[in-house]
Image (cartoon, rainbow, N blue to C red):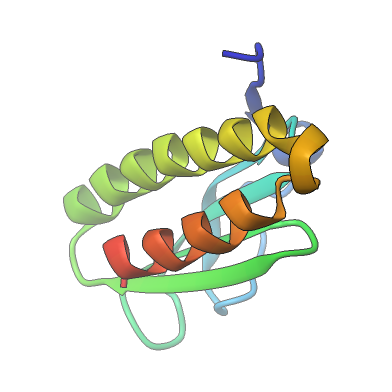
Length: 113
């Protein structure tokens, strides 16, 4: 464990504002190792949307009809993103964490289609 953390994106200033999926941001967090995850309500194509990204590597969006499922998936995705970022950081001396990141992103998108 590296002591990496999640914190409110822009100190929470984005909450209630429009998000990338045309909804209103309900949760918006950034990881200290370079990722962001956002939950929107009333997104353009669904009741809820989760958008996440690892800076410089990927962006991924999922849609949900029910708030409870969206909240559960948001938390699961945060945990998986943390594990991936920390694993890549641990192998940074080998290849900059590239192979772990490539494999991890592939698995993440498969686990959270």
